[in-house]
Image (cartoon, rainbow, N blue to C red):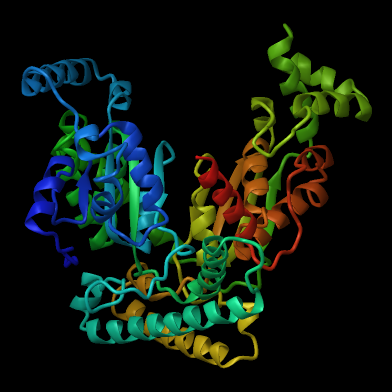
Length: 535
């Protein structure tokens, strides 16, 4: 795999070596830094076009409050002796007694840079980890790595003899993206002139709107940065999945991660590449995937038109069961007895119980308790890949997706309709679709995902309980959100209310927002500016 090596001076390299496990690889861990500094770095990371090491040098190193002498940890005594003791204790507990929960007690921050957007979805699969991914909304993606745009050429495409055509197609997509994002920045600046807001707030809002409009042209091979904090157990599971993955990028990146993570939490990852432990587990994952794939390949692929969101499964008795679940922790009756009580109640009585459970929600972060998890909804969604990337960040539910393809078509942003930019958009999408078909024929549908732009639609399923629905639907319907996923969230809410008929649950989601707005990020940027001034 080829990676862009960011240039650092000798002095910078000496400094970085104290705080990062390497200075020349795209995967590295953070060393000798307090957790609060790591968190601050990753938080800033998601809205910066800089690498984490450059961000550290430029914005954290010489800060008066978090300068190098402040953040360097001073370890007294013999740290290697302490490490050896800890490893011996871990080995005894983990290997002798098989207590997997011990692997949850140690964690690490890792920066994963120059990862394709196919790989980032693999990295973010695990539920029990924290992720921050570089956003397509806050930076212009036409800023190059050296002399090339921010995309990778998969080895499978190289081996198929399609590398030159891949680069030509990707360059066309990025050239078109650059033209659209820069032109629309000027268009929006003229359409929405600055009022009383600080220039920084106005510029950030205009940039976000332009980036949102153009992002559909970015291909899935676009490179991104992901910051991860997870336990040893979560990393182990991620690495087992990665070494079983059909894509070479994923497998090679997993090997890079294992090397770096073993520098900071070696004991937690001993099983990953042991033949009768981790390797056998990965082999099992590979075999089951291939077995199901062989069956799926025999199914007729002809499909009909699908709406944006389809509610495919729900419980007609959800609100009755929710009533019983709300009473359960406050009663002494059995679950089945309380269900009988709830069924005997009038509609008004059940509404009173659910109303008490929901309470007076003064903001959307006030969500009802676990009783709301008694009801579940399964949604089949077909939206553009850009919106999917945002919705996929909700992992405390069941989410699974099909491979990215050009089969389901794309939509052109409304603000481009009737302009020369729309014609450029269609031409770039057409070239990408043609190349996708050729890559699929020469390699596989899995590899062909790399060349598909974000604007094409992907099909995925989201199954969630009502409590998670509160969080997802209210958050993703807010005016600051991208219109692509706002429509999905709004339609989920409508179908809970009108298709499932769960009006008590739907009406309790009082912060679902159906409003329209011209500058999506304006109010959020204003609030951020206010916080900056009050700090």
